[in-house]
Amino acid sequence: MDKLDTFVDYYEILQCERNSTDDDLKKSYQRLVLTFHPDKLEGYDHEENFHRIQRAWSVLRDPQKRRQYDAMLSCYESSDFILYNTVSLSDMNFDSTESVYTYVCRCSGVYCLESSELISPKVIINCNECSFSILVNIPEDKFR
Ligand SMILES: [Zn+2]
Image 1 (spheres, protein in one colour):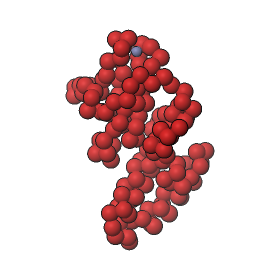
Image 2 (image 1 turned 60 degrees about the vertical axis):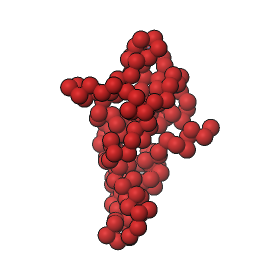
Image 3 (image 1 turned 180 degrees about the horizontal axis):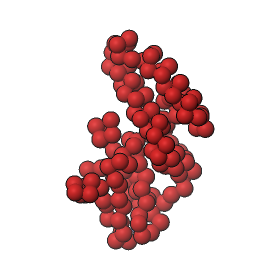
Image 4 (image 1 turned 30 degrees about the vertical axis):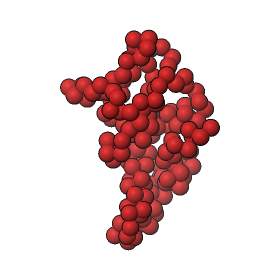
């Protein structure tokens, strides 16, 4: 199943295990930052790499975001969801007062995505009424 390759694995980026402790993650992050810091290495690839490391760390260091991310990752890997649609964030309606993105399901239920939940390039969200899910592609600049 090739979909797997496209779900960014933050643990892999930080060169850690899924069950690594916060301490292990932090040590690994600090080591990687020293290696890939743009001041030390020049070139676009390194800069990209550095951003990826920063992003992975910004999610995994936060217990709530890590839980959210873990749930999504295992859901994705076990294919434990029924995909209704794959959409881009720009296909969703943005309510700026609530800071929430919404998408209407075919059951007329709603998929809701809060700005704080934009934690990876792909996010899985569930319908509030039925058992369908959608996969949302998030542009880089929204969660960097
Ligand atoms: Zn639905």
